[in-house]
Length: 418
Image (cartoon, rainbow, N blue to C red; front, side, top):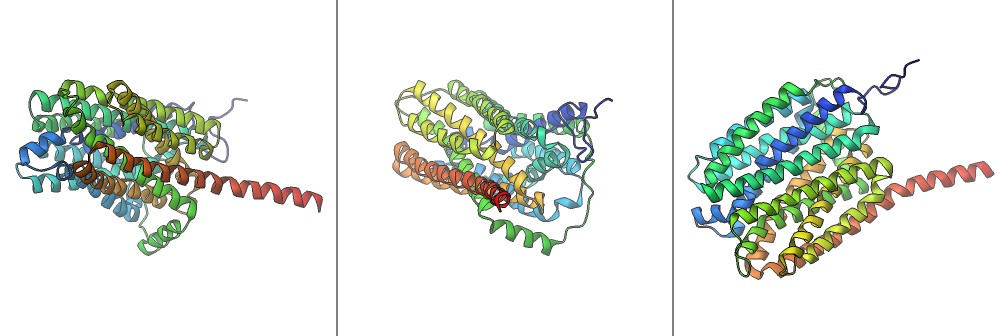
């Protein structure tokens, strides 16, 4: 007898199914487009500041307002995303946001620019809010680690390529050319997503009971395990965005004075992020995710300490370790949220990303105030303190998940001897 790819109880797509490759390619493109657009202004904050005569913390509003928009969109998505097809929502988000990205290249007012970015972030939430849900609904749990890691790898490569393209084009031409170029590329990626990804087989649109949805979200916010994961998400992304927001300011100043062509190469460290994500995904499929999470989070502290030095090689090494740690931790945390959210998976995943991007907005700007007033060393030590909190949260998450399993085993032993 030929064994079916899908077992009798769970017919979600496995790694051996040809549709698995279509899903992973499409999900990869969605991550690529979303993060090319979301953070395209991050490496060119000095150019934005110079054109509009504003300081680093104010320049960061171009990034922070994008993430405020995506956070607001995620909350709306948690309430209304179940009314339409996952694929349709992601496709519309990618195509419409890319049009706004092109439009931002022609804006001449800073308040208008950050408003456009906030609306763009709101649109991109249509992708971010349901991509993980789409994976959880369509992909078999045995293949979820690989699918999740490929999605987050798309995020990493999108973030990397967007920053490199933006840095180089801004240096050669202007930030407006950078925004326009990335907008056109992401429009193409959005069209490819729409034509590539198969329609959902495990989702039926329905009108959301808003009161019930809020009740479920309130329940999740009272769950110590999930709440810890939400706070962890906020702090790891906030720290990550802070480093990449302000590193270019340090490397353009004394004693480095690096040109934009060299600064663009720093974003190749996102390849370390891809390695971190893929490694975490593989380890989570082999071991329990919660057992890998504390070690992955702890790596970021080593990376931060290396970036305190004035040696470029050590700074790059630290940046690589920090980047790999972030993407690995994000892969593991988001997988745990998807697996341990039983009542309403989309609501829980939306809350995860709501905290994730809210942390980016808050820490990304507040750390800029510290950097502007007190310098790189104090800024880095502040992020080290945040990292220590992250380690404590990761340890708590592991103990919280492992404890029930131990209790179950002990109950079984007690019952066997009674």
